[in-house]
Image 1 (cartoon, one colour):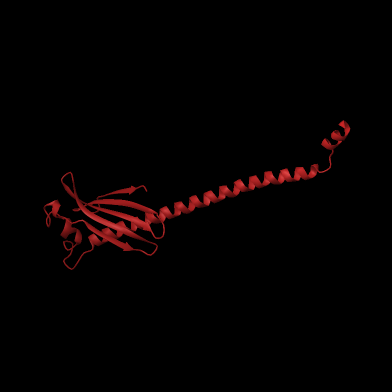
Image 2 (cartoon, rainbow, N blue to C red):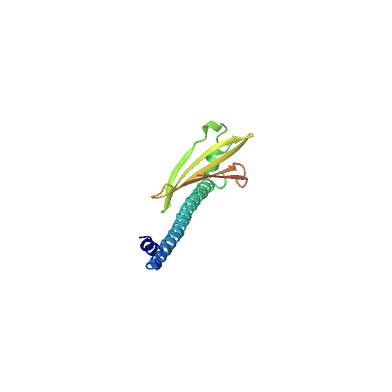
Amino acid sequence: MKTKMFNVLYKKDGSALMVVLLSFVVIMIFLGSIIMLFKNNLVQTMTQEKSVQAYYLALSGIDLGVSALLQEGAGGENDTLLYKEFSKDMKPNLNNTPTLRHTIDLGDGEVEITIRGMDIDGERWVEVHSIGILKDTSFRRSTNLQFLVSNPSVQKREQNRP
């Protein structure tokens, strides 16, 4: 009885099959983890790309808002929306300055632009706030630009994190 059991336990028949099956399982686990790693990297890259697209939409909104404020009419430099709505000459009281809001569809997304006057250390500033929203996603990025009404080249930029 003992020799029969000894022969069954230490018989070499079928050991190659066990080695092949064990090697196959180890290789499959290794390949599965590599595939998951690539998948996670792809998802992260796509998320980052969408976030950057939304940020550039927001930057486009800033550019559109500032150019609308600075566009001169027939009356020259004093015939701009900036001068008419936000200058101390036209609106001495800051409370009388409007908050302008507009949403623009730019194809792949839309931009929500808000423009308001503000007083910083006795000087009149304008803040342009823009939110870029990608269509069919939840990606939103926003950015701000503040500039001096009397000299629009004096600017402060701020990027808001999602």
